[in-house]
Length: 152
Image (tube, rainbow, N blue to C red):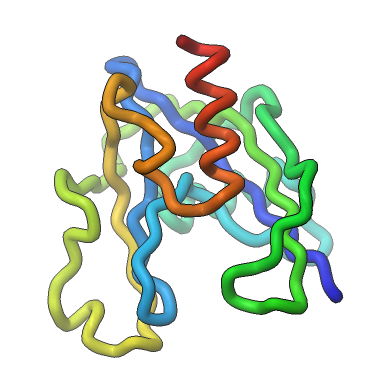
């Protein structure tokens, strides 16, 4: 058994929309919060800054810690890995580099033709429309309940 540490960020804009990432990975579609895997020698905040930049092109500052997984979660991709996810609020001074889509999984057919391919697209979800059905990862659902409860 190995641990897989993931770090994710919650970015809200001035309209109180929340950024999500629609992804096609190994033949499956997922909507999740932006972020990804901690690399050896990297701190969690540095990881999130790197992942956010890779996924969105944004330079972000890392805000308050929201949640760290406190239950057993097996990886969807490797049954020998336990997932530990850490969530922070993130802030961006300049959203102009961000390219977003309006529809979920708005990929070109050639992007998803190969079941081993990976692609992702950023998308805003209105605060009022944001609910547990909007994200697919079990830990994201927990975090979504926390932020909805705390931010009303």
